[in-house]
Amino acid sequence: MIHDSTDLPIWAAAIVAGLLLIGASLALIGAIGFLRLPTFYERIHAPTLGTSWGVGAIMLASMVFFSLASERLVIHELLIGAFVTVTTPVTFMLLARAALHRDRAEGDPIVPAKGSGRDLTEK
Image 1 (cartoon, rainbow, N blue to C red):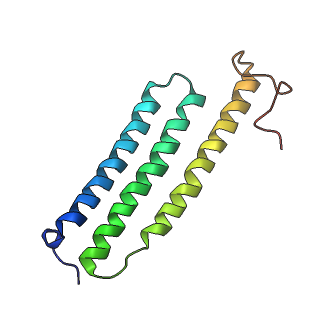
Image 2 (tube, rainbow, N blue to C red):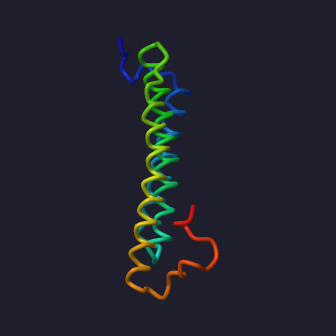
Image 3 (cartoon, rainbow, N blue to C red):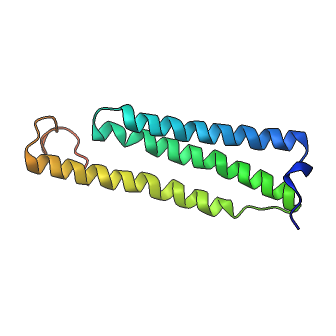
């Protein structure tokens, strides 16, 4: 049985509120970075970190709240966190590789040539 949120102790409410504020702030920073950074390659970093860490803090807040409200350990949010942690960076890495391939095919002078230095597409 889940109790009302007003039944939470003040220390638990403070922890949940703090984690929610941290998570929302990190997600906001990621969104602002996405809007403000000039190139696609710079833009993919901010949402990756903001999403991963922001979701992590919100996930912890959810675990604390529902564990205390239902008076049992609730950890199924860890599965959500694992999926976000694994899929977000991999997705953005694949997007970066596709953009690099496209920019090289179009002959963009900003993108380094395939043989110069360490290449993202090399194994």
